Image 1 (cartoon, rainbow, N blue to C red):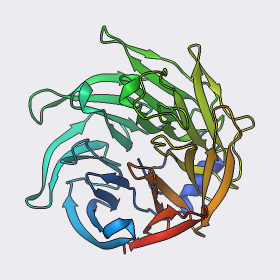
Image 2: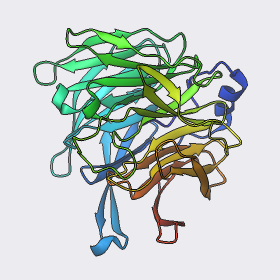
Image 3: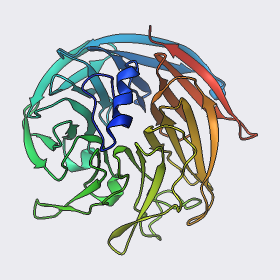
Image 4: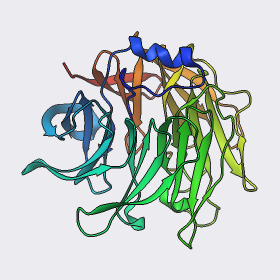
Amino acid sequence: MAALSNQNTPRGNGAQQADRRANSRSAPAICFFAALQSYYLNDKYIRILARAWRRKLKGISRVKRYPIETGHQDMIHDVQMDYYGKRIATASSDFTIKIVSVSKSTGSQLLATLSGHKGPVWQVAWAHPKFGSMVASSSYDGQVIIWKEGNQNQWSQAHVFNAHKSSVNSIAWAPHELGLCLACGSSDGNISVFIARSDGGWDNNQIEHAHPVGVTSVSWGPTTAPGSLVGSSLEDPVWKLASGGFDSTVKVWTLKDGSWRRDSSPALQMHTDWVRDVAWSPNLGLQKSTIASGSQDGTVIIWSVTKEGGKWDGTVMNDFKTPIWKVSWSLTGDLLAVADGNNHITLWKEAVDGKWQQKHVVQYC
């Protein structure tokens, strides 16, 4: 999950939209609710937000911050925690990825520096551990690199994808039920979906012209349809993607008969400026599917649909009056974290009446 900073920013085919970033302040990126911790960052270091709950989830009782020195020499754009909550991967404008161990008791330790990109690194993503210790990274240089750990803390490039002609702004691993599969959104307007084969190669099932002036973000949907039982083996897994773009729209895609098709027609359009981030909520058997989108226009919109193939309805959760950098759901999908241009992270929860309430705010500086 990445907050695209105002330095070394990726450029879409619509240069005017991309150049607006120059007037935006850098803001925190967040990787929310992994191992009961969340992270945000600014400049060249990170602070951990360790949070504790009151009983019955009535609110957040306290937030503690722990600084992490990464050793980066330039702006950090993304930080992601691994499945076990013991290591983080960071992406920076210094062209490198750092692997850092984190512990509240022993602090942090730099484990490895991964070098190979020829431009700023926008995002990193850990694969599910069932596939081994793997990290994907995307960069302004148009490349996506898969890094694999052999011996402990010994990383090497397992594969380099060169499918895009421009900056790759967003990457996301699919739910592990779908296999080893990586979605990538680029400023060239296309989305690539790389699927690992049993022989070690990769297939690319591309969505061409997904957002003609550039893709800013991608997020995988749950593998079960709304209302389905979690982990049910009676239904085939669902392949769905959400994407945001410089065209100010959110689009939903479904894989049918080997091809990606638009699930929402027309595109979801309530934002008045380009969409910085989209995040699909885990549904955990709920009767609806939910996507959050954050935009340069300062709003967060909650999109929901109650049945497969139904119409997506959008509700403005809040107007923050400042650009939204990142949105991220809790593992259970009942809380949403929002990072904005005022260097705030706010936590939101839907009330029984359907309205969203702010539960906590953290001011970075």
